[in-house]
Amino acid sequence: MSTVSNRTFAQIRQALLDHEEVALVDVREEAPFAESHPLFAANIPLSKLELEVFSRIPRRDTQVTLYDNGEGLANIAAQRLQALGYTQVSLLAGGLDGWRSAGGELFIDVNVPSKAFGELVESQRHTPSLAAEEVQALLDSNADVVVLDARRFDEYQTMSIPTGISVPGAELVLRVRELAPDPTTRIIVNCAGRTRSIIGTQSLINAGIANPVSALRNGTIGWTLAGQTLQHGQSRRFAPSSEEHRQVAAKDARRVADKARVGRATLADLKRWQQQPARTTYLFDVRTPEEFEAAHLPGARSTPGGQLVQETDHFASVRGARLVLADDDGVRANMSASWLAQLGWEVHVLDDLQPAHFSEQGPWQAPVPAPRQAEVISPSTLAEWLTHGDTSVLDFTSSANYVKRHIPGAWWVLRAQLPQALAKLPETRRYVLTCGSSQLARLAVAEVEALTGKQVFLLEDGTASWIAAQLPLETGESHLASPRIDRYRRPYEGTDNPREAMQAYLDWEFGLVGQLARDGTHGFYVI
Figure (cartoon, rainbow, N blue to C red):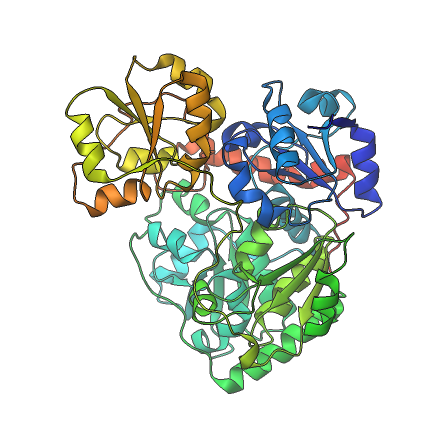
């Protein structure tokens, strides 16, 4: 274990301004991260560091700088990264406080670079929008209007605008002519808050769509604050595009990408870049997850384009890296790339792809370290042990999954807070660890053994195997051994948020352009 050096706020800031590769990693859980962090910090919680870091920071000699807020997590994370082969690991001098006291700007919420950029786009392009009341009046009068929901399909299903159709962001330019063939039909693009409706609306305008297009101002939040009714459980989706419409859309998208100075690349370029030792190259497939699973390029990650633009910090956690985008239609990659270029990324679209190149099938699998040794038991063995009252089950899944359903009596534990959690638990003879699949629980076996000195077992294939065996389940926050800070409660998600939280979120978004100016490192431009 080599010693870990410090990097200062001034060094990180200069590296950002010089467009060097920077991986500034906040290793706290998502909720505290969302309370305060630098603009380009990536949140990779210590709890699941090993499961995420290889895909998010693929090059082992990337300059990685870790920080926390005085909890001692960054030191542990540094040791773990060095054990995984990362060679340029440092700590942010003074942690989060060091950044603040050096004059660094701090941001709240998640996916802030993309949200701040959306506000910048609206302020510079004056993206047209309609208030919830105006859209409701159009619907009530049976006006010639289509509502397109630019979020992920699962978000759309949770709650949607009446008549709304699910068309995730990167699909808009490709699909819009099927959904609004008459150029006089008014198109309204919505999301939950602001960003994806602004970007979606401006995508259609940038691509030269003849129809009048407006964003639904403030999305489903604005709709709710206006006292209007949302629909739930809808499943209206976009239709396939005709070849004629695809060709028109491809020409439009290529023109927008050229204007945004998107790079063009071949598979030979990609291969050469992937072999460069001093540069990170990400390969993203921006089509739908279903298309990706049917066939994709070897080594590509499935990142539907709208979400890639919305959550770039999550997928490409090395600021200053090179992004390479793939599709099979010439529309989605170019439109997504046009936004990533404006977000300050070096981004290229693969131009020479043939169907034969999409030679792999199945969902994307995150690269993870070789699994650690653990003694595995079956669900039936665990069920038998539990009847004796001498076995404690520790569940490392997300708190939301745990609340939904868990093994009766299982304790919910955050891996990064194991010592504190174990101190709260009653005395026991042995521990059995689980999570959804046992992938994360396996990482904790040796840690629990070291902390307790007791026998520790792993539930084979995790809680999924318990459920498959049709054994009894429990719901609710019955045994929380750690605080539920693994996920930040987004004010624009779900349907039961307080009005004050929704309004505060909108007010915060309006202030982002000013924060960007104060921060001064973003490098965004708007075409």
